[in-house]
Image (cartoon, rainbow, N blue to C red; front, side, top):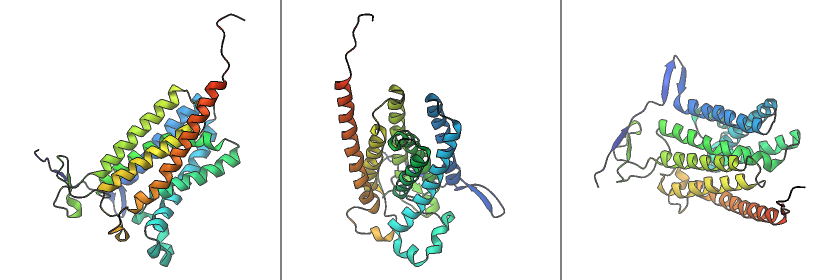
Length: 276
């Protein structure tokens, strides 16, 4: 098969004015919140919930994602370095965010939101996971624009040569693999929500979403180069190790949700065709 080598030398900065620069990653990260907000607005209005409640939810989400993703990277991937230099944790502009940490941050932030606003925890998670999957797509495209988190050398026809990093051989564009997978998961969750018009068993969407997101992440990681030096020689890298418990947590939740749905169908009273 003829190999199509794709040279990739995109400037991660869109433009710069003095010391101020606008980067593709930042734009895509911000876009994930904007698009997510608009999609959640459609859901909230479909369920006759106030825009003010969504605004509060968005603030909790933003705080949970940023703090969780940063601490996740620092404590899960490079704890020795950051614990010896704790002030470096605050320098988020230097890079270093972890999706597993973001997941934990979201769960904690939404738990606080649920308690304060008296909304069901799984009700919230079932809706938020839809836009989280889409956000994963935006973030991985940001990684592509940064020429980071790519895979091993490959002979597949679509291999990318990341010239900005000094690479000379084509590598797996794992950012695209992962991003498109998250996009498909978003489409699936969005379709399920609207097919049932939001009237599904609580816990179904969050369980399915977590299982698919971290299950796919586990397999894509086999193609990725090591992200930190501590991963050298590991059978499974950190991304895979942290994905395994989340996958099985999602699987368990999905099984429970499907059983609850089956019981609800069995208990549903039969309707008569006669007028009453």
